[in-house]
Length: 174
Image 1 (tube, rainbow, N blue to C red):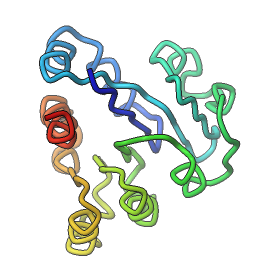
Image 2 (cartoon, rainbow, N blue to C red; image 1 turned 90 degrees about the vertical axis):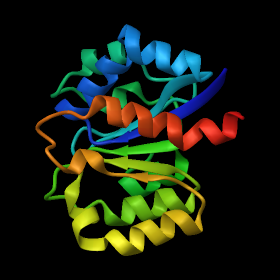
Image 3 (cartoon, rainbow, N blue to C red; image 1 turned 45 degrees about the horizontal axis):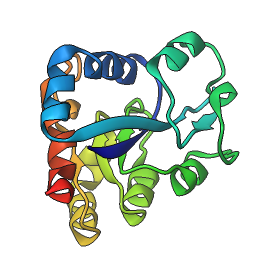
Image 4 (cartoon, helix red, strand yellow; image 1 turned 180 degrees about the vertical axis):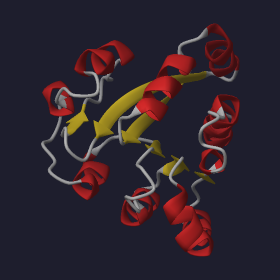
């Protein structure tokens, strides 16, 4: 099994629903069949702090924090104060950008690419504003850039996100 480390930028309904889905039987079987074990190693939020734990942050831990608690209470790694500091410090292969459209997250996506992280985003703003540049930057750094959740975001494309996660790392397993 190869462990794919996953960091999350923004902790609202979408990432929590995705994490719940990833624990269901069908996605777990898909990951197991492809030799992938997913591990959340970091979560960062705008108001509730940042948490890095190279051993993993569980869905149970995140649900205990809820929508109002401090994510920083889960930190077991370097202390970071900004999203960019978090991205530079978190040990991750994939960054899931789940920030609202009012937060561009453009610099964060570029920083992730420069660190060799693939990006899956549900935020339409950086895709709409910088599509060509971000695609080129992802190619230049040999990482994936998935953004299908930016369309019809009210309908969670979990299967597509799972396929993107496995596609981004299946070549590293072979």
